[in-house]
Image 1 (cartoon, one colour):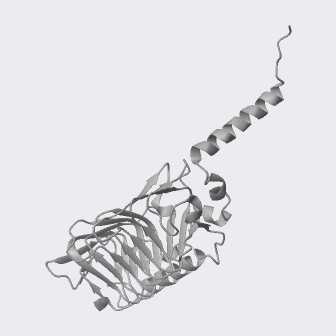
Image 2: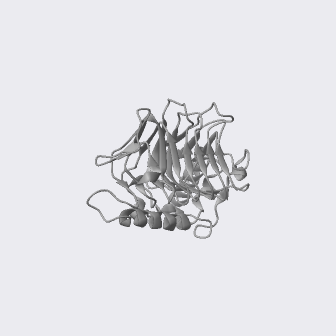
Image 3: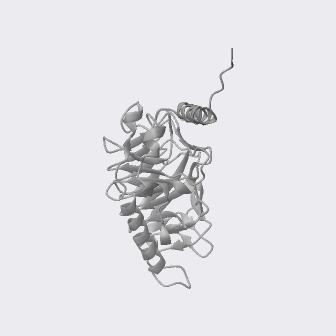
Length: 290
């Protein structure tokens, strides 16, 4: 009996099919949906004049409590310098007390400006750039976001999830990271991008006030490519502790930790509030490298 030899073309097609099926099983059922998000989400959103800012408090300023707050980047507000309390940079001290000392390892820009610069010009440019980025991250500019509940679990709940790159929206209007951490899987691509769109609030930590949660980057994911477009206010780990990643642009304010907490909250990213203040208690902010 003659042995059967499959044609080379047939073998090649079967090999390709096995690779496709293997990769689909390895990545999970969300791979197809994630890879079909808007192509715009695959490119980082330009932050322009706001890129160097670790913290920006719109026209309302910033407040720090505690002695462990460090901002590795610039800080700014379009308000007067009197609305910055508990901070200093290399050139000036802004209403610090022995119990409220925050170090800014960049420059603080305000309406009254640091010495040697033009009042409000840099802060105003950063405010405009932050608003522009907020608009570019919106569902109007980036439609087709995936409702996370389509992947199982509760709508708006990001805790205990591992998410592929893409645009994610909240059906109830708010996002929470509670009851477990969030993992962002870059799948070996350092240029992978995540955009989280919510009409109202972002809450990290909980349930309750005693449980900080974190966002972890795996398989090449980078903090500079994660964006949180927050329709109102963001509250990050009211209990203190935990690590957040990405650029948070909130229409209202951003709050880190709660008065009296000693364990620092870490943000590898930016906290940019458009129309309200940024409040920090023992918070460390690291602006990602370009």
